[in-house]
Amino acid sequence: MAEFLEEYRWEPAEVRARLLDTEPALVGDEHWDVFLAALAEHLAAKDGRGAPPWVATRSLRQFWFPFNSRAARVDAVVHAPAAFRRRGIYVAEQELNVA
Image (tube, rainbow, N blue to C red; front, side):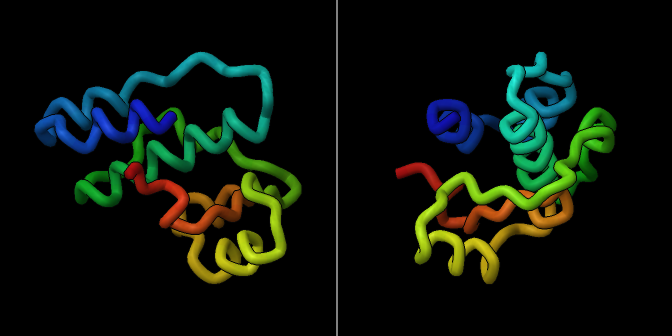
């Protein structure tokens, strides 16, 4: 995921849009399948676009904290981007930044 985020950041806007339009295959773990939908919506919003249609069908029934330490949980509750919170995923936006 880090490699995708790094390469995505350097692509022109029209290429970035195409990278998000195609629904990725399910990875077999509901948490990560929903995470990919939240990430696609989040990245599209940062570019001023609406989410690709395929993300609408993916959400969790129970909250999930991918980084599950006490400090990470507090940070995620306060700073999780809307696309993630809406789907029940709590991850701080800084965790999505690539070095």
